[in-house]
Image (cartoon, rainbow, N blue to C red):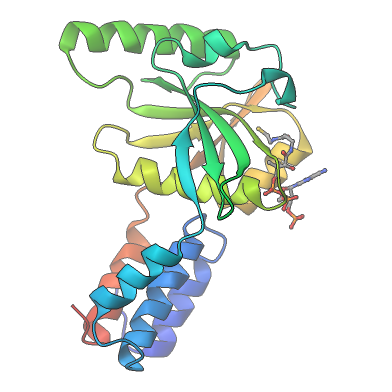
Length: 225
Ligand SMILES: CC(C)(COP(=O)(O)OP(=O)(O)OC[C@H]1O[C@@H](n2cnc3c(N)ncnc32)[C@H](O)[C@@H]1OP(=O)(O)O)[C@@H](O)C(=O)NCCC(=O)NCCS
């Protein structure tokens, strides 16, 4: 992709506005801008400052009240924590959990909770045999917000986590057939993968080559390492 000038660059970035990493992207973009505006001596000192200012922290939760889950209250705590399944909470700046998201790790995309149970069970057993980390697909099967805006924020943090991970290469959802789930995920930049009889799958693209290329070009353009 050719980035010939600043306007073209902004145009490319604008196209990715709806992506979950938009916060990160815009942060990086303003990072580049602040650097060139000489608000910070080095890009490292700016980054350190930003990390300090970061409001959220993703934490694995050992206990939640499953009856609070508006999507799948029937899944008990044991289900959510066996065969490598995990519960994540988003801790905000005052130390409160503002959203919760539950995951299974599989090697295929499940269309039902039963399929997901089987697939994550198989992935867990395979990983014991191969002494590796289990399942390359992170399946988000429920998400709910305890504070407004928490839902979107936890998706952003999970997205960053999966992107950084060495063994996960896809982030998909196993969502209920509701408008709320559809609007929420599409608005956060996910693409519809498939609509099933009782669920729908969305996928967050973790490759994002276009904007990453744009960022590299932006750095070159602004002469930032
Ligand atoms: C969906 C949810 C997680 C969103 O949390 P959030 O990001 O903190 O909250 P917001 O209220 O800012 O909503 C973000 C977007 O979700 C969608 N949404 C939220 N409530 C909705 C509703 N009642 N109907 C349709 N879409 C809705 C909208 O796209 C909304 O964006 P908008 O306000 O710009 O229209 C939260 O509403 C929730 O906990 N819902 C119950 C559980 C659920 O259905 N989870 C999603 C499917 S797994």
